[in-house]
Amino acid sequence: MSKRRFSFPYLIWMSIFIVVPLLLIIFYAFTDNSSGKTVFTLEHLKAIFEPLYLKVIGRSLYMSLIATVVCFILGYPAAMILASKDFAKKSTMLILIVLPMWMNFLLRTYSWLSLLENEGLINRFLTSIGFEQVQLMYNNFAVVLGMVYNFLPFMILPIYSVLVKIDKSVIEAAKDLGANSAKVFGRVIFPLSIPGVISGITMTFMPALSTFVISRLLSGGKITLIGNIIEQQFTITGDWGLGSALSLLLMVLIFVSMIFINKYGDESVGAGGLL
Amino acid sequence: MKKALVILLSVLIVLSFVGCANDKEVLNVYNWGEYIDMAVIDMFEDETGIKVNYNTFTTNEDMYVKLSKGRVSYDVVFPSDYMIQRMIEEDMLQKINMVNVPNYLKVDDVHKNLPYDPNNEYSVPYLWGTVGILYNTTMVSDTVDSWDILWNEKYSQKIFMQDSQRDSMMVALIKLGYSQNTTDQAQIDEAMNLLIEQKPLVLGYLVDEVKDKMVQGEGALAVVWSGEAVDAMSMNEDLAYVIPKEGSNRWVDGMVIPKNAKNVSAAEKFINFMLRDDIMLMNANETGYSITSQSAIDQLDDEWKSNLAAFPTEEMLSRCSVFEYNADATVMYNKAWTEVTAH
Image (cartoon, rainbow over all chains, first blue to last red; front, side, top):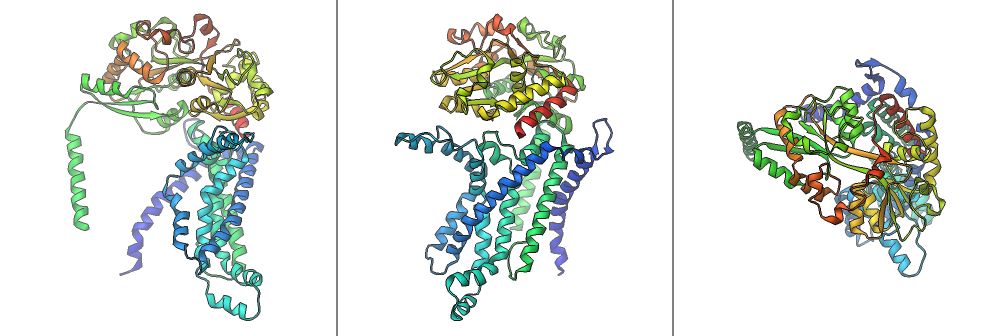
């Protein structure tokens, strides 16, 4: 039995649902049929470099970067706690991290609305104990919060899966040779966990960069990210060419950042990781 | 496992044949979400024996993109005024034979001969309304009678605008004293800058959520469609609705038959059915929007009939006009609105 025969269904699947749509995006990005017939054009590509879109792309990069950093700062210690051998409640905590992902993502984001609104639960509690109402929603803070909340598990799990696989004898050896715990972490554990960190960063950064639901809901439609602009081109203005060109740019951005972090990752030794 | 699969497949195949054998007449309807009393569909099916496939859309643009780029075919669609005009211009609609829609005679004259379909050839009005300001009387101390209040810093972070380009641009254009259908780039730019200037005061740009938020007291002022206002006011007594003195938009959602419709005679029956008094009343009750025939309006209860949000006076209506479509201007509006949202 050759492996090839097994891979056949996957090949069909991938070509229909991944390759063909990609080609379609490229096709729409470089053609124009407003005059009735399809002609090659670079207009869409030129249009995406207007200051308007560049500003939105900059904002998207900035906000998804912040969200990724926050996810990392919160996620790494969580993964370490999970991976530590003497942590008895490990499986319970793992389930608690994964459990929200069983619920629909839209539903979870909507429930943040009822917490953060001016008349939401948090503010009602604050005003009932005599504090001033604070505006938690309709701003950058809420959007980043939504991204962190939704994508944190994607940071924790890959780091965790690399951390548990680290050979404990390596750590023991470091300790035997006189390294204190800070040194063990800095010189042994962290370098070995880099592949997990890279997967974690990619898996939080990519969806954060392209999201449009989180920004729409939690900013009340006030903060526009590149995902929102793309969605607008497809559903409202019907300018599929511009929408495809912008999607293409987004893919290039993600691709470049992946090369960048993977390159950085290759320099450190380690096994595992998802990419 | 394999056996189960085979059985499942054969059941599916048999079922699909059963589906084919049953050659019941079918009507494909495409309407806005939550814009009908679903019992009306059942009644139509019972009375005519025609099966209705009912699908919904969220915005005119959404519907237009699906219809023009997709390969779908619907028999009755419910676009708004300017979109009807666009579809007529792009040759997407067919003329309706009013002989087969006798109830059209009951539609009040005020809803006929409007600029988007000047000779009433392609569309029959379904529901209509206005755009205005819904405000919370406990949070707003000034008199609300002008669009200017939406630029008043006193209400910073208490204002909701529509996430709908024509409606929000309309507000700015009218405040500046221009026509809501302007095709002048300079005027559109001026309106765009006015909306960008307003942005720090705005709490959010919403469509469907605005009603619930106003009922909760999340904001003080909101630009809304009249039906939403009627609904919101019935849920919170502190809310009031006004059509600003400078004028506003009045809109009509019509029923049309696309060129590629497969069952025109059933479509005509359906449109005629929708214009029956009892059906209009059911839909008015369900949606809160205004109906188009005086004989049906007379049967509403007095409180509703006298609600100025639902049925504005002639003087109020005379200040309002309907959107018109212009292909070049649409590009300008798209661009301006993207600038506002992206700012």
